[in-house]
Length: 321
Ligand code: FAD
Figure 1 (spheres, helix red, strand yellow):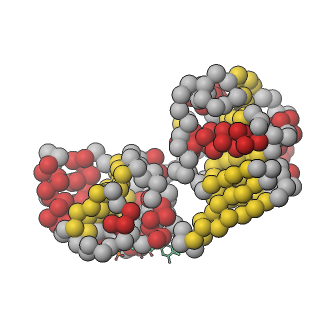
Figure 2 (figure 1 turned 180 degrees about the vertical axis):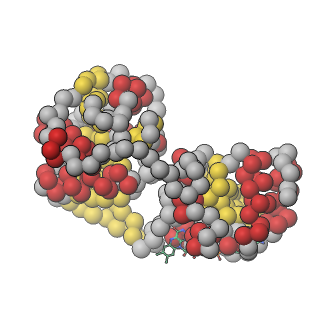
């Protein structure tokens, strides 16, 4: 009982970034337990997913053929079967909508202590996990004496595993109880602005209350177009109905981990920062030199966005409205 089982996540034919972060977290735990890292992928294009997940640090890949998309009952049955076969010390899944959907169910079924939304995990015979609380204002350390354990990890907290691995890939047969699969995924309907998923974007231009009114959106959209970025925002913009909810970054919005996060007219409240502090490079434009966003920004411009944004659009060869 020293192995680690990580269950990857995919959606609409693509592995999610957090799956590769899961490999890093799983490897760390496997090094600590002295066991192997098993990575499982359930449903979808399991062959190509398994190839892509074959990164350095993975010891064994398991492909479970069933359906295309995430399904609660399928994942519960597949994970239970894998767990029964491998007898690992850890089950690790992403702390995503899907992970949060089935991890508590599987933990309950198998009687595992479950730590959700972990931002750090350590093991030296027992588990010590770190979580954030009160909108990331405080960190809390949880010690769980006895495993095996179930943990869901927060996206953006571990680097993605790299390097090509040499793990064996094998099909894992699950004797699915069809009667216990109570729902079927028949299709997808994206809400709000089309297919945009800000959590997957590499360059986010994010706007806050500093843009003052909805009539100023076209100025920002011109910058988004000129820089080939994706538009996101703080909560007031969504509360005002200027952008749909799927564009909101933060504690009650989405977690994002772009290469570049350009925050325009955003103060940097803890609830906002909770969703974007994993960005690689943070650039802030704000008139207030004491705005908290400057505490976490790599680059900052103390200035009026109505001067700075047109200058940026021009610099990138776009046309300001
Ligand atoms: P403000 O705090 O009003 O900041 C506007 C900034 O624009 C200021 O710093 C100002 O100096 C600057 N500015 C003004 N004019 C200009 C100009 N012309 N040029 C340049 N800069 C200018 N917030 C989120 O964003 N995401 C969440 O998920 C979220 N969840 C929450 C959950 C809970 C339970 C609670 C209580 C709050 C949550 N909030 C969330 C709200 C959060 O507390 C802040 O109120 C919000 O993030 C502030 O948004 P803002 O930075 O756009 O606005």
